[in-house]
Image 1 (tube, rainbow, N blue to C red):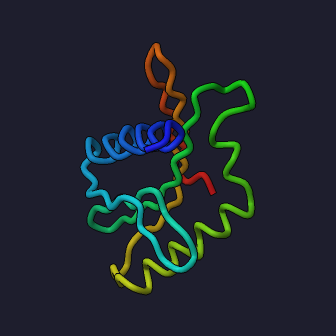
Image 2: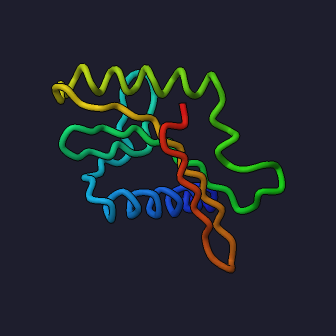
Length: 116
């Protein structure tokens, strides 16, 4: 696995652990014809679709800033596909962004609930 992929995987691991610790079940890397959703966090009455952005520095801005309008639109299509496929019933749907900066000194995770 390439260094960039390992960095992304480490950010997803941290975000997944955050949701698991909060009592959610987590689906990782859901793929469909519209693309990939990093995490889907589930608990009774709630479905959270989460995009995780991981960087090794904030020099070019915070990782979450990379989730622009185009990416949000694609994530909405992926979420609609998952909801149509799995039919979870009446649930609250939320779109979160988790921004992770991983350095040799540790990791900094920023959770943005209801980001869009």
